[in-house]
Length: 99
Image (cartoon, rainbow, N blue to C red; front, side):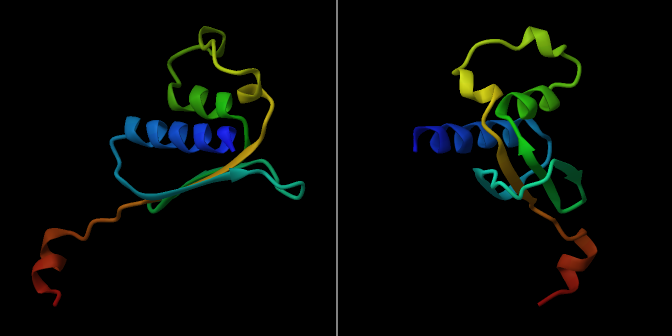
């Protein structure tokens, strides 16, 4: 349970580093059928079968992975699935004409 809480907090921090605003994030342990995947679309960021260390490393691309240290050992071994939905804002013209 503590690992799941830590993963959720880390996902929140990772999303906070982005200039984008995220509406919701789902973090759960990867299942045995989960396949490694990383995609970014205008409305969603998906990372499947990633360690928390991998997520941190990808959040800071200008920093070499060997510079990231600390944390419990499982952040480099346990696999997680993360899906973050971006807050999609309507262009101002559409907001004025809707509803």
